[in-house]
Image (tube, rainbow, N blue to C red; front, side, top):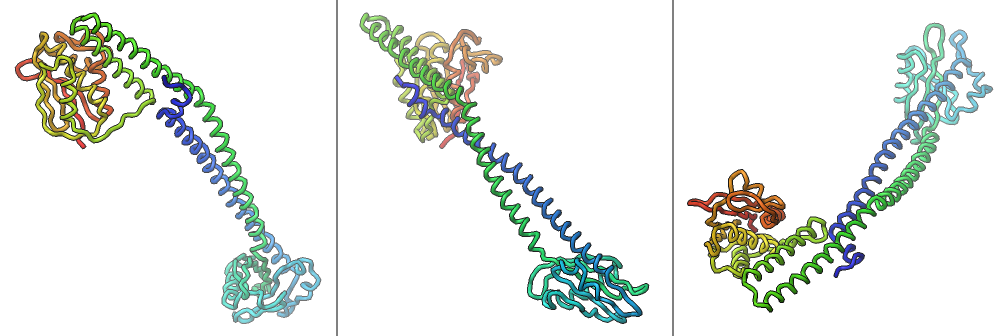
Length: 417
């Protein structure tokens, strides 16, 4: 007897459930990570824009305020207030651009030094922007020593024309450092949250699947016990029947019952996931010949076969062939009526000479609990249902067709290797 814990741990169904649990954990973590990444990206973008806007507002306000502190008097620019203005003292870089008669602007009152300013070409572009906009402009430009700065240039009016501009610069790295700190904290926080989400998802999926695992273990134990408990009395019954010299028909019924129980248990174990079909290359013609020879009343069965190789489970295919032949023997006419088995490329065809099955019932006989006999689908049985199940398990088909001259042909088609 197979005991619950060890067998259940090796069960393919349990393995699938565990894979499903891991997939659910990964899906939960991935979904959480995707949401957090979107939220973090939005937060980073908003923070970057907010810091840039704040920096622009600061440098623009400083430049505008200083431009109002200086003035022209009879064409002479007075810069004395810049020496005492608090805005000027707090500026990282400060300069005044002045031009006459449309020439390139000259630079005055540079703090802390000329190397802190952009090159002349960029200064010319800044001056031109002030002339075009006639208001404070904000641009990005590197200093000559490579430091990246944000610049604001505010116009100083000389009558009805712009005679100068106050240029104020501030380092972009100041705001970017704080932004990078925020990004690092967001990355660490999101990583921690994803790990927590994965742990919680794994715990919840485990709790959700615990009843299913318990049920699988109980089902596996039941199937194992059923196999043991059913085979033992069948074996004993056969010994009793043989010992009392009972008829061959009684022995055949016992053997058929034993094979039917074996097939039903195999089907139940596979559908429950407790057993997996092992598909290997095999000679279909040899398997059919061997299976037919092992039947108690195989004298009435003729086999015509050509070499065919398929991928299949030997035990299941033998069970399917056995069910087809026994079904033909039971419903194909009187006892001893001939049955022809043909094995061709990917095909096992079993022909009988009975009354056949009505076309409307040829699919129904493959359903569980239905068997074909006397031209109708009636009674209870599982033989052809097992044949259809074995065919589908091997990616093949099973069907019934009318035989030329009367009778029925049962076909089992399989993909060739």
